[in-house]
Figure 1 (cartoon, rainbow, N blue to C red):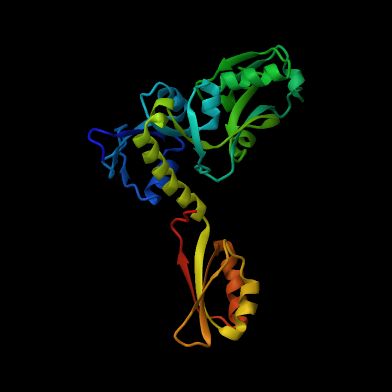
Figure 2 (figure 1 turned 45 degrees about the vertical axis):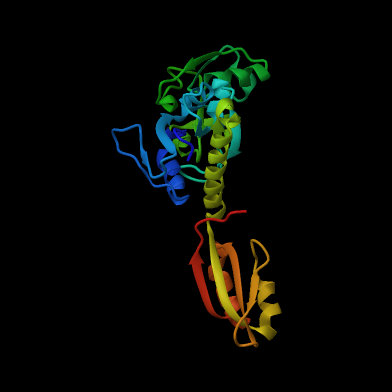
Length: 293
């Protein structure tokens, strides 16, 4: 470690917090966060963690208060912060699908298209994103910042809303209908331009990203190994879908080989009976924690 060198890392507080902390823990970083502290402990003495709302992350990174952080693409766009988007990290609290900012109105609203928003009132937390979306469509409307509970504002307090959704369940529960998609967003690992130019900090970030992406690549994957009679090997290999070419190794008995592969966990229950019928024996399934390219 360079004397006095530390990487100041921002982690998203709020809805993405537990998913982000879990990702880092799986990557091998033990992070301990308490309910009352915004400075989680981490078992790497070269990293200093801070919990910051995702909405504010890009601004603090741009200003160099933080060297790097994890936030949504939506908040980078909303703030207009000049940061280095190092990589995409597709994880979330519900699924690995991008979240969507959508324009929504009450189910019985006469608004059917973006053109119908001319002169209307729109409530949203993503004010700048919404204004730019309307400008692209040549629409002039009143866009107001919403401090929360945006879904309940139409029709009394707003004609429409622009709100983030991952599954759409909250919009449906509030009897709202989607008119248009405004923006798709996924989490990004971002860095300040100054930190990215620092050789030590850039290398530290790159090492961290290798481990994080290794965890994401392994998600939903398992390893499968088995012993196969050499004369049945072609039949077994035809059954196996592999992340890469399966590894085949000779055993002490020249008539048998060991086959090792990685595949989607969802396929195991279908493939194992087929593999056994093809001649494989001693089939073992094992967890995969990381896949590093």
